[in-house]
Amino acid sequence: MGALLMLPVLSTAGTAASSDSDLFDLVSPGHLSLTLFASGYASHAYQKTDEGFELEQSVTRYVGLIGRFSAYQVYYGDGFDTPFIASPGAGVRNYGVLSGGINLIPSLGTSLVVFGGESLGSSWGPVVDGRCSTWILFHSLHPISLSFDGAHYYHNGLSGGRMDLQAVTFSTEQLALLVGVGGAIWGGGPETSNLHGQAGPDIGTFIRRLHLRVDLQVGYGGDQHTYGLLSMTRNFGWDE
Amino acid sequence: MLNRSTIADLTRENCERSTAPFARDKPHKIIILSLVTTLTCLVLSTASTALAQDVVGSIIEVNGTAEVERGGQSLNAVPAMAIKLHDKLHTMSGAHLTIAISNRAQLTLTGSTTILINGLPMANEKGSNFRVDLSGGDIRCTVAVGSLTASPGFEIRAPNAIAIAHGTEFEIAYIEGKSCPDSPPCHRYTDVSVYKGIVEVSNPTDPETPAVQVGQGYQTAVPCELPPTSPAPLVIYELGTPGYQ
Picture (tube, rainbow over the protein chains, first blue to last red):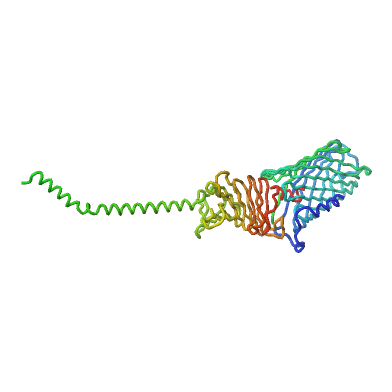
């Protein structure tokens, strides 16, 4: 559903796409990128950390191939991205998600990624994951980022997604400041009849010298009550 | 018998006889000597003025291999070396070269960069800015505030872009052979990133489109013969990659 909502935005956002004559031409020079990410989430009902990496290889100007591995440590409870069937017991539950996919880039600053993979460790089962993101008013003093990330865990039937809307409010030689709102919605899992949601403001910064993005979101949700989410991302890229 | 007056007369006569040739040529020699001295001074002062005007700066720092092409000759760039008008500077891959342009600006050339020092325009040429031509690569410029007289600014010209600065710090890169992110069919473009002050950017191949003013913390791109894009935050291209979404 999130992808359908994004379609009208994707069709108008970013710069205009070029002609179709080079749709299948291999991009030259090719580009390999490595993204490292880590986050921590804490609320009344759910506490976890996760970290991982993502490798992307460009194929054409519009298509890239992606592989990703994420490791999760669940310290307490269940949330929008836990694939477990049984109710939580004592101790830390560890699992990983290994997935591969394709990245579609219809225009500058717009991306649609579809992953398929499997969860490993404390939970075993297929996972389907998707991510849509775009920048609106890319060539302006305050570009706006809109992103949606959703997943379905077949092991427990949980479907969940996170949304985020941020604008660049301040830019200097050293960093940029982003301000916006974000949230999550999920349902299924061990309690199949319930739909859960949470939302709140977020603030982010991008430090140019370190190529590091740091985001902090705080908010409120039904079961989760007050929550906080801190995430960091660092990207490396090489032209081949 | 010789008396005192006779001796005096004889002495005077002898002196006059012995110095007569010098006495007669002295004014001429003095005039010739004066003329030669004056001419020499004029030549020397003209030469030194010409040399002083020819030197526009010097090399501050060199890392790696860089060359200065002057009068058909290629010289290795070394620290403290003078930079003259119409010098062509070139850095090899992985090298860095920093030069000071009098009291106007400091330029840092990264690897595989080539620039030509054009200086101020001649009397019959248009424009009033001190000009440097960038034919390829990336240079970072720091232009001092208040170091210029009323009229001349500092101008960097890429094949498809002109960046004019008055008291600022910015970076300009001309890229060939790689698809421009803002206009993928275009394979040559200029990026201008401004760190301090304001830079005016235009495309000389499209003179009817007004120049774009880019403030600190923002950047613009000039693809092929297209006008410069509206200023966007310095981080936008990096944040726009899927890894950061």
